[in-house]
Amino acid sequence: QVRLVESGGGLVQAGGSLRLSCVSSGLTFSVLGMGWFRQAPGKEREFVAAISWNGGSTIAADSVKDRFTIFRDNAKDTVYLQMNSLKPEDTATYFCAASRKNFALGKGTDDFGSWGQGTHVTVSS
Image 1 (cartoon, one colour):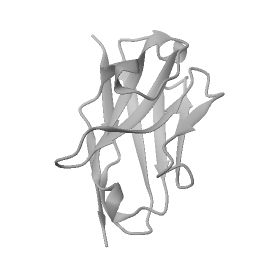
Image 2 (cartoon, one colour; image 1 turned 90 degrees about the vertical axis):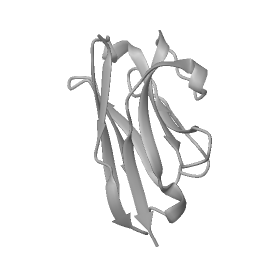
Image 3 (tube, one colour; image 1 turned 135 degrees about the vertical axis):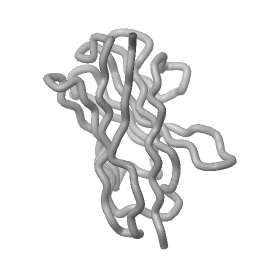
């Protein structure tokens, strides 16, 4: 059974930092691209960042690319999202996702086949 479990969300003041973690089980983590998405109340789920199977390539949304960093530890089956200089508009539930295909890297929701339950981030002004 595939499981993706996010953690690290919480309440932080604007300008602060958080690190999200996503631990996977039940899949071959080391060959899968991984991604982070977020969804604010009343809005569609949006792409945040993704990383290739070996960490050699990363992509990020323009709104976060100078502030957020995605990285992974294949030995721990874990992907991370380091979020710095947080803004109130970053408030959302953040979801971890695993690619549908081995060695693939995408940024559309259809590119990912397994999803976590999400961790909530609130940034106060």
